[in-house]
Picture 1 (cartoon, helix red, strand yellow):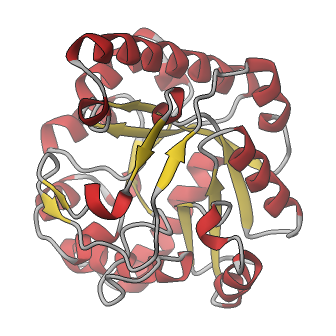
Picture 2 (cartoon, rainbow, N blue to C red; picture 1 turned 90 degrees about the vertical axis):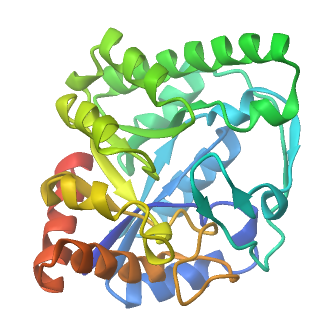
Length: 295
């Protein structure tokens, strides 16, 4: 079956969907939409693989350790994301309670390798760098230590991606310069992958294009024009689409829990920005995803 669209980054494996995850997946598949369930720690990565095992096609997994899970901290997503001045766009707080406490985890290469080799695992991540949140949590002195830990953990996951021959699913926030430097040093252009939730400039996008990476966009495109120019700039063949569910619901679902079914609204917005027929854009987005994640 050829899907209508593929949401390359959702978190149905998170607690926000613990009561109705299978129902959400059924709605998604019934609409002809596929999705990659992305892990952020060992437990959510294992849950992503478990979900993917339940379906012959359409549901896949990405496994990895998110940079915010290297230290213990409480994140009130509703409060922190309500007005994200550093990225330049407003975020309406979600009705759902999406607050959580990060459980510190040390990257266990061999344990992650085991689930990374699973046939339904299509990427390593989400992994990367996140400097935005640590500035709110720790002193300036401690920040340097955490940043170095993030860098080393990311390098380990790049090495894992190379070993298992699967692309990277990269998270980056307020750290694009350091991320690009690591990708160059690790020769990650041999691995490839996607820069999830891209919110930066044409200049930064150009560097990722030069490294052979795609960039994916979220519901943010439906409630701000801040990234229209970069979407216009990036060739359609280098764009992917995602929801990042349960976060960042697109218009007209702002204030509600996001889900993969809503990826169509983001794809339509990309078509509108690029002034291309929706059918053409939808088909190319699917082809891009299959190429990057080797479906």
